[in-house]
Image (tube, rainbow, N blue to C red):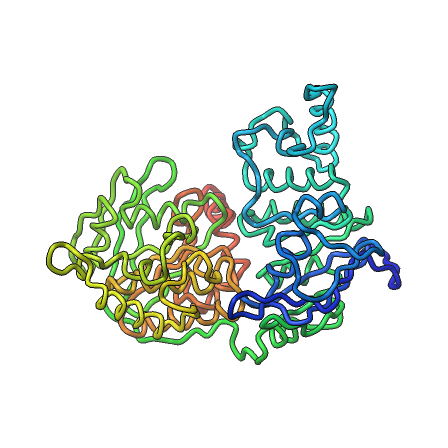
Length: 511
C-alpha cells in the first residue's frame, strides 16, 4: 500500500442527493478519496453506486450537495468536462469504437494535429509510449476490435493516462476477465497507486475489493453507511453493512433427495472444442461444471441446447433418446439454457418485463386471429414477478432498466414458464450483488426440490463447491474428472482443471 497523507484529500463529495421520478436514488451521500488511494465502493444493486459515479463523471447532475476536486468546487455538466478536469471512468461495457485503431481510440476527441491535419506519426509514437508503460506489446495501428477484452480494457487505462487522470473510476473492471488478466489488472492498479493516481474501484466481487482496496465505502438503499480501512473489517462486517442484515449462509445449499436420471449426454464431440464428453444429471441434483477459461464449459451447454451444431453425440432425457438440432428441440424436450451474457443473449432489452417473461410461451397465449391474449400474458408475468420477488415499478418497465439481479430473475422466469426438467445455467450470479446471489441460489434450490435438475457452469470456485452435489471438471474440451461434494476442494478442482492430475496419472502409468 502506498504511503498516504491522511490530511490530503483529492476528492470530496458532500451531501450528494439525486432524485428520479418516484425514486430517491441518493440521499445525502458523502465520499472522500485521497491521492494514491484505491477506494472501493460497495453495495447491493440499487444502492446508488452507479448514480454516484455518474454524477462524479458528469453524466448526471446532483440535485443537492457539492463536489470538491483538487481543492476546488466543481460542477461537471458532461463527461468531457470531467475528463478535462482529471476524472476518467472505465465502464464495465467499454466505451470504445472497435473498428478504429488502438491509437484512434486512445486519442478520440483529442487528436494530435499538425496544422489542419492529424499528426499520425506523432500520435502513434505517443500511443506506443503509453502502451509500453502498461507493458502492452501491441501495435497502436491495429484495429481495436482484434484485441481481447483484457487488452481492450488496458487501452482504456492508456487513454486515462493520456488525459493525465488524477482519478480513474473502474466500474466492474473484472467482469469479463480471466484470472490471469485480473492479476495483471491488479498489478497495473498497484502501479497507478504508487504513482499517486487515485482509483475508485466498484465490484460485486467482494474478495477482489478486499484484495486491492485501501479503504471501502458502503452504500445501502441510496444512503451512506460507513467508510472503513480494509484492514479494520471482516467480510462478514462488510456484507452485514451492505444488506442491513446478517447473511447466515452466503450459499444456502439445501440437500434434496435425488431421483431418476433426467439428462444423459454420451460421446459429445464438436471440433476441437468438445471431445468425447459424457455425463448425466439426476432429478434433485445440481451438477457443477468447473474449468479454466476456454476449457469448453459454455460450448458444452450451447451444444446440449442445440444453439451450436455438433459433430456427434447422443442425448437422453428421462431415459429416452432425443434429437436436439435446434433450441426449439431442447425446449420441447424440457431443457432450458440461461446464457452467460444475459443482456446480449438472454433478454430483449428494448421490451418490457412482461414481454420478456412471456416470450418463450407466446404460442400458448395466442387467441383467435393470431393475437396475443394480453390478459393471460399479464397474469403469467404477474405470477412470476410475485413468485421470483422481482423488484419492478410495473410490468411495463423496460427490462434494461432493472438491476442485474432482477434481470437474472426475469431470464429465469421466462424459462421456468416453459416447465423445463433441466436448467443449464451458465454463470448464474455473474454481475449481481451478494443479496441477489442468495436469492438466485434459493430459486435453484426450489427448482431441484420440485424434481428438476441443474447443470451449473461457474468460474467462482466457492460457488461451485457450496452449491453443487457433484462437480464435473473439464480441461481442453474433455471431462478430466468428477468429484463428490464431500471430496471436492479448490486444490483438487484446479488440479483437474489444469490437467495436472491427468498428467500425473499418465506419468505414473508410464513408470
